[in-house]
Image 1 (cartoon, rainbow, N blue to C red):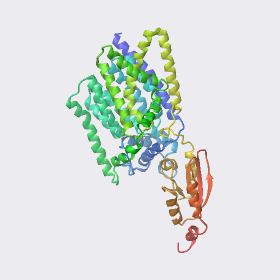
Image 2 (image 1 turned 45 degrees about the horizontal axis):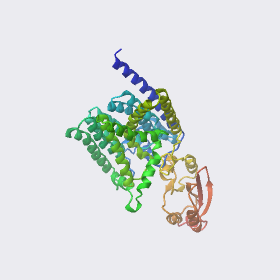
Image 3 (image 1 turned 90 degrees about the vertical axis):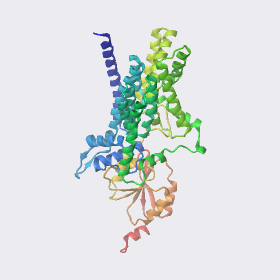
Image 4 (image 1 turned 180 degrees about the vertical axis):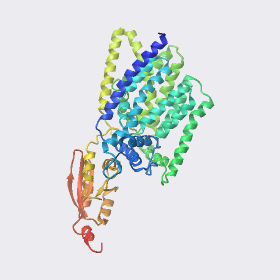
Length: 509
């Protein structure tokens, strides 16, 4: 058998093993019985309106391009929809969760293969490709988000496919993949400068190739804008995206605080050994340069490091709201750098100690990564922050079921739970859920509503309800705890015997 064919077969064998490990971790996370983040609930609700109610133009306020939401809607229509006793399409909340998260699961598994093939082509080494695939397979951040309904994972997969197309010289295909990344989430545009840096490191690109890369993204922007205009809503998705992601003002700037927030999330990239890779990356670039090495690999590493550093500094300087999921676009360059630096560091370690000892050290590091990956599959991460994408919202389905059991058209005053409660109350809930920004406006409208039946005020148990309860009781409402599961509480509000109810009972009302 020719040597090249033998190497390729070994590559396929090891890639298959790595893919199975990564897929197993992601499927385990996908199967965890875990409730939505509020943003996941928003995206899933919009997709559910399309899949069950036929609202395929998403006639609601939206600050994201629609592609990732269409993937969720198609997934719901194909896997999570069924006809209920009333003869309409419906689904349980759990079916909806799994269907909405399925596109991210598929995207997360594909990322492992893309990471391996991209690194193998860039560094021209099978070992670097396999290690890059292994890092992606065990990345806690990638594992966690592969089991979510956020729009980031389709964006990341399309972006990585675009990077690979650039490496193999298919700039037109690269533009198409970049357009799909952008159509999933605007942050997908980040991959365009990264693709240019990689293209310049591998081979000089021409103006024609640059046009082939950027033109599909421009066309995608135009098509999305036309689609958005056709929905006829007062605010465009681009305007809402700008409002919801406005950088901080000068008075709010805290560059150091932003940097610390970014650093706190770094261990989620590759688990406990992430700090080792962060230390090795500059050494793997600087030491060869000092030794007189000036080749394509060093140029590539400099480009990747420059891009990563600039992106982190820009996020910190502009005070862009920093969430753990905002590290995902930086995962490909950091993955490539870490795969190269890790093997470079192993080579140096073998020069300082015996090969057997170096391999024991590498095995310990791999074991630590496996531990971090297995913890991530159970949604245990090495950081804790208000901006985490993996909150514990368990019990929200019980609250929703309790509210759905109340009388028809019961009023639910929902100040805190919004999209989250809306999703779990279901597509066809017959309750009236309304939002008020403050106790005063709630009381004003509550008194104007001439109904004697109890209304309901649900909230997280860690919120202080006194301002709301006092305002309601001062207006004559009776307020008492109606339901209290775990971290939620539901108050029943009985209107005053005189006033609201008297008016409702009078013949002239």
